[in-house]
Image (cartoon, chains in turn green, red):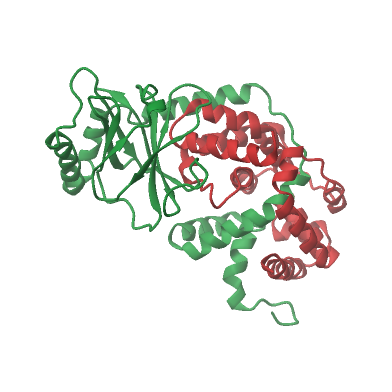
Length: 237
Length: 185
């Protein structure tokens, strides 16, 4: 930076992220930054840096209890959103067709793989889940085996080139349930995971499966530490 | 419950929100809505606008919780960032000119009384930020603090502090560059 207060262009890019987080930009500049964020990982890293570092300034703001009706409005709004999510595997299968031949073929291949290896659950106790990413694309198909003590997971689409480990989590149904690790999954190959005995009974309909990215070897804490890249509910067929 | 456990519990709740768990969203709301409402209210200075934005914030959390990376961000910081972004967008979109707080008022609020848990959770990060802000010229630090808390533009800050726009930009940018160097040390 020179003495007359002008900013070296080399610093300008860095400062744009800081200015965005600080909140001094106008509406159009903000939209421009947000457009760039999606394509510019360096800018996204900068924004994350400033959000984390400046975030502490918010401690100066005293909490104010919102009016009670705010929660009921939120509940109503997300109730609608939940209903719009694919809840049954058949719904999801129909959904897959929209993704073109490549992913439809993959999906079909996944189901075929399940059937071929003889692990597709029998008609009496059939629990399956389609684990979709945030854009709704199916990333994994999971099925509980007929014995009920293992789970077959088939990647439905190549989802990531991320070098991090892919860990599968079970979140039992009911309030205040925490995720339990079911083990690591390999991209591009079906795997059979043994369900820990204490979790076998909790693998019912409406339990949730989720997949997160973790350090090599899996989460060191016993809880997900990285982003959740796919999730879905177990559904009785 | 200690701060680390609180943070872990909130992070775990966000992971469950990402998996579509309504009960977990309620936990996140109960733990954080007063903080985020305070943040929205401070920026918007209008209760009903702040209520609208708060609602929007938690609907966004419901949809975007999958983007939360517990290994990289603190859950409360992630939520505050969403609330600030939504509130600032609403502020920019609002045609109504808002009440301008004198800059001294903003400084007066900077003696915080945060919840004990948050205070400990952010203690390290906070300490460093406070120390780095102290290294800045008082006016630069004051402008940065006011910008963050009120979501004010360069133009508004220049008017409030009665300095030319160029001076305000220069204060904040110099302050940010110095802050960055200090934070990275």
